[in-house]
Image (cartoon, rainbow, N blue to C red):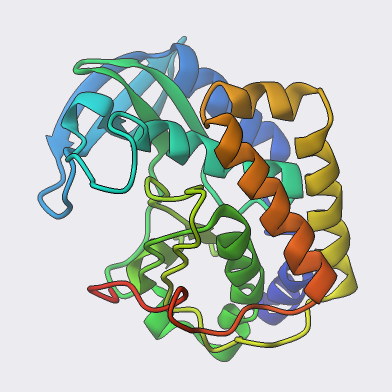
Length: 255
């Protein structure tokens, strides 16, 4: 049964309950926030919170803009917005890879709030089975499109409910090529027709006036949106996943 589920995922779906995801977004946007703790690992301040709305309670990860460590290559105060933009791209593709994520006020001001994913400490990419790794071809394509500068193995997790989810997208969408990832197992492989179609449709949605373009305009600069569109168009034209090189290499640490 597990194998059958992952075969479906390779075809372009992560078996996500759309109604549950929409409900989670409503709670994350409007619920009352209670601080539960702080994550000790990471460069930026990251908190575990509880969000309550009309009797429904969800755990979430809160990354306030005020807690972001300044970076030389990314504009200050933009990482939380990039987390939300990554979720929007995942949903526009229909791949269900990124947990529901919103931008809202919290105890320390504006920040990203993402549904917490329960997973075992060893439930990350480097411990995946061959079947579980199949969906990571989609993750590799996704990371190229969003120009992920920090795809560690620990950012690709097997949730306790069996889905593969990807987290930590604060350093994505830069105009300059910055792809750093552990997903070079699939370098140079041909993209499936379904993947190409999804990304081609994404490029159209980015380029035309509509909900996706409007939402991205509130999160990314115009030049970043144009670069996003170019990458989507480029990978479809090539039909292949990228190869590592001087611009494309590994993050550190890899986990």
